[in-house]
Image 1 (cartoon, rainbow, N blue to C red):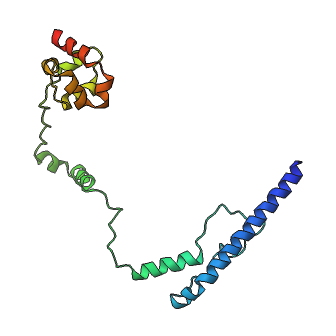
Image 2 (image 1 turned 90 degrees about the vertical axis):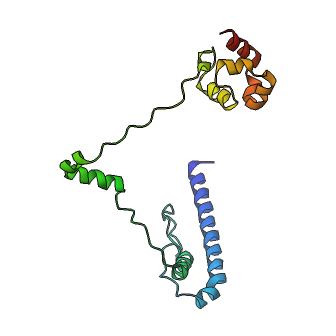
Image 3 (image 1 turned 135 degrees about the vertical axis):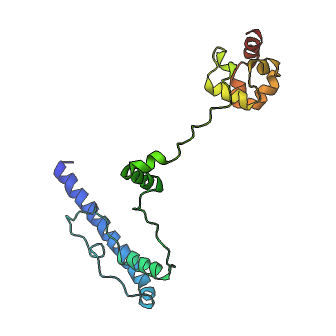
Length: 181
């Protein structure tokens, strides 16, 4: 098949698809016509409702008359809702701008309190070979906060509490390392 034949066939397929789409739209409009007469007046005809030219660019999307009438009906029946002011800056930005505009007031403001220091001390489990932060977290969640807790724990019960990770880890060896260290 030559390039010219292929292009002609592609044009014919696109034209057939356009015709079928237009026929489906016309049938849909005909089914909805009685409902549209009872409801609000239909909006003005849009380019989507008219048949496209053979070389028309169909990549742009327009709203059909049906969608416009449904939106108009929904807007008329929907209760009025106050829209939030999306363009207003957040309160923290407003406060920062006020402090920048009046530096004397910023100096008299009470200083911010420092964040509290973390209460938990680092676990000694991370000293074991092959134990990273993820496994330390899993072991702590399973009730082993230190090497002593790990050494005293039952390997099978700990494997059960760890779930899938408990089946992947060699817990008896890890217990021996914790007990000997």
